[in-house]
Length: 221
Image 1: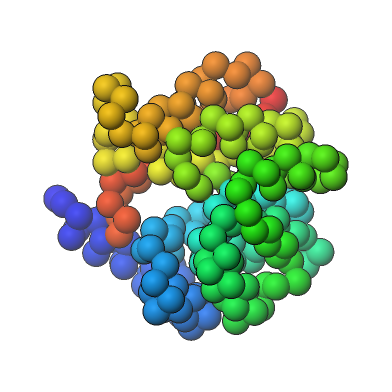
Image 2: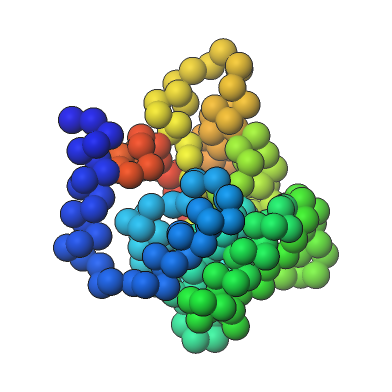
């Protein structure tokens, strides 16, 4: 078993469970054409996020890290017609691509995209008394994971679900030598969730088209 098999199983999952979706296919194609890094969640992972939003009955979602908006669209599709997702993106080019993707996918009315450093945007949201958010998805620069989780707690309520992506990192999360800032960010996410008594969490290891990684998932008590 290896990455080729994992990717083939992902293809099988999509073929067996998903309807054809030209809008989402076009989003990924646009992201490639515009030179965005190929680090979007996989279709199966995107559907998981959408289902989590539905299971949670979420009306307000916060996403930290937009990229080209692929995961944003999946999350938006899990919201009711009057739901809203606030998504934060540092790179103006990525944001422009994302906005066009939101239009193509028909979710623009449910999406508020804020451009700039995420920590500044999170501080602004707090000042504005935004939220509380029902679901928070963290998928941005990994070294800032503990800061993003800290802000997530301020913008949450009891029952809020927090999902943090890329926390397994091909198993490198076991490394404690401090030489890889992204691995340290993943370990910091585990430390934060494990030490904050307001959070009850676990992690799911994943394999598939995106390789070997995983999500940390926690609920605010």
